[in-house]
Length: 388
Image (cartoon, rainbow, N blue to C red; front, side):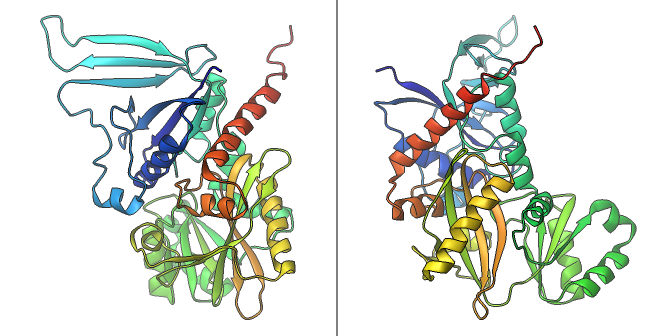
C-alpha cells in the first residue's frame, strides 16, 4: 500500500515557537512509518521555511524553552540549507525547495531548485501566523488537505473578542468582559480605566485577544495593576480583553474530534501550580496536576460535553479543538473560556490525555485527524470554481 506523504509544519514566528517544537516531536515520532512518509518542515522564528535536517525529538516544552531552540536548524550554520516555498496555487508538486551553497564562487551563490509533493499537511504551529487562519489560507490556495480548522474557524477561535461574540450569539455563557483597542487606549487611557472599573469587578484577568499558551496574561487586583496588565498584553496584540475573574474557579477542558459530526472526550481538570494556569504552569513548572476524568456529576459532564460541541460548531471548527471552561467551586456555575483549534498535541498534552482516557490512543488519534483532513478536502472538491 502506498504511504501517504505527510508534511508536518511546525515552529512559527510567534512566542509559542518552542511549544510547537514539542508538539511536532510527538507527531513526527508517533506517525506510523508503514502508513506515512513524513516530511518535517520548520518555520523558523524569523519566518523562513526549511526542510529540517534535524527534526525536533524532545517532547518536553520545558526542555525546549530552556535550551533556546537548540533543535531548530539555523540558516547561519556553514554548509547548505534547503529553503522551502509552499506554492500558492494547485499543483501536483506543491513544495519548492531551494538548496543554497553557502560558499561563494566567481558566479555568485549557487542554488539548486527541486519540487516535491505532499498528500496532506499536519500543521502544529501554535499562535499567530499559524493558528489564526494565515497558514490555513496558504493551504487553501495550494488546494492541499490539512489537519484542523479552516480559515474562518481558525481566525475567529484565535480572536477571543470575536469568539465571545459568537458564543453569546449561540447562548453559551462567558464571563463578563470588555474589549480595549489600541486606539481607545492611546487616545483615552483614563477613560478606558474608568469604564472598566465601573462595569467590571476586581480582580480581573487581562489577555491579548490573539495569543495562546497564556502568554501576556496578567491578573489585576486594582487600577494600577490593571493599567500595568493592559500594557503587558498590548505587547502581544493591538486588542486586549479584560475579564472579571471567576471566584475560586475550577479549570476544566474537553477535547473535540471530527468535522460535521464531532465527538467529545471525557472532561479533565487542570490543577495549576500557580494562582492560575499561566505559561509557567503549563510548560515550565512540573507541579501542575491533571485529574482525568474530572470529578463531576453525570449531569455536569453531559452539560460540559454538549457545550464543548456547541462551542466547536459556533466557531466553525473542524478536525480538532480543545475547549476550555471555568466553573465556580461554590455555585458550580459554568463559563465557556475559549476554543483552541491547534492545541498542544504531545503525547502528554491535555488533548492527547483526554482522548487516551476516552479510549483513543495517540497513534490512532493522529490517523483519525489525517483522515478527517482528507475527508473535508474531498467534500470541498465538488464546489465549482468557475461558471464555465
